[in-house]
Image (cartoon, rainbow, N blue to C red; front, top):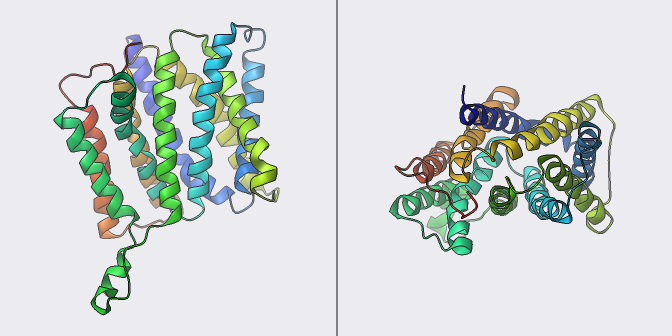
Length: 301
């Protein structure tokens, strides 16, 4: 088994783990406020990484700076995504978060002057249409006859889309620095930064609230140790061997797993139009990545 195959399997496992956490985090937010939950989750992960990599965290300042930058974008993505989960479903959050995979070519075009081709534009158009179908409150259409209503968007959906932008930035930054810096140092630095940011913002943003229930403790353990500490070490390693385009293609499985777990665990249902939107988003993601030439999106690969 080649190292590229092992890296691909690792990313598929990451997509499975991340896809399963949407419904878990939504449940945990019933017992803990958003910024406190994120601070605890990433603190647990940072502590675990400090133990895992003890004695291996000495590195040049550039490695720490790389971890700090990736950590800022990562924490922004998780803050926006978790805030959005308070008022949207786990299934929708998973698919809307998956938009970051489509956004990568657009951001690469801006940063690296790599102009998307027609396949990219087609994928982006499909995903944008799907996002509209999933996020617009179509119940208001029935009132148009009386001229009393228009289309409205769920705030949670919009926050989730903003989080997808932050995750796209994170993917590009990770692809840019991976292979140039120490994996242990970068992994620890980005997770530690992701813990410090919500804790620093906590006093100004929310009144912390927590109930130490068995469910919350279990979710903190799963998300902190499995879905954060382990996953981001695996991702940092995997992107040493795969281009961002290939990485994005495999991670496109995440929203599919989110839909499956949302249905199986939480009994969530999508309307027919929202289901069509989900399919369009997934097709848009695959349209962008499944092209004849998976060329690197930045010069570091």
